Length: 299
Ligand SMILES: Nc1ncnc2c1ncn2[C@@H]1O[C@H](COP(=O)(O)OP(=O)(O)OP(=O)(O)O)[C@@H](O)[C@H]1O
Ligand SMILES: Cc1ncc(COP(=O)(O)O)c(N)n1
Image (cartoon, rainbow, N blue to C red):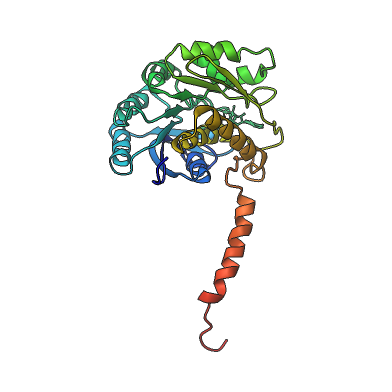
């Protein structure tokens, strides 16, 4: 990577609760030390308990956001998150034509929220597979999303109930997804017993990314944080295996230190280490305050 600050672009949807989506992506970019930009394709009225409204942004505005970023700032890696509908997927596919072909694209095929709400219309599955997967450098489904990509049931409850074990079908699923066009497939392990990720590279090489599982952490936004960190690591010039290891480690840590005291449902991950930041900013304020405080007049 040259001396220029790397730029990452997230093409995704806003989470008003700040745990997932665009908000999680920009935090993950900042935590990785890259400049984050965004093309917002939709809005959710969402908190840690429910998603109560979803609105799509019009297709031309989606394309224009990507154009504005690409033409001026340049883009070193793209992350795609919740896209919602086939109309939006079509706009995202058109927007990707503005991104140079050698720029890596990480696709997190978001389908169902942690709180259970459906985030990708069922009839949009096909568009996602046909329009986005062929331009994808790494697709990062969790186990239920992996099953849905190859035509299985999409409901998160299905896979939560059948949380994977050593004998689950991640390897076969990764091979079947690879046949749909993405260069590499990374099946994330949040819904498996051991929180292991499985990376299948374009040459068929399989790598298991181990890490501690944090059952008592807070995981709303773990997938968004993972895929954005992966994109940022690629933008920084790291090879895919190193980037995937870093994404696994950082997402796991963000779950471990997740904000269980925020919201009544599944709390948001914390990729920045907010308690530590709070201490540091208090110390900074302490350090600069004497130089800016001037007492004028009598009490
Ligand atoms: N409880 C956990 N402990 C440790 N690591 C975790 C845990 N849950 C998820 N991870 C890690 O976080 C990353 C994201 O995985 P996950 O399977 O949760 O994605 P996801 O289901 O797509 O997330 P989301 O529901 O936010 O879209 C992976 O690297 C995974 O191993
Ligand atoms: C806008 C948006 N994007 C992605 C997710 C998935 O994240 P999670 O499964 O952790 O709820 C979400 N809930 N909302």
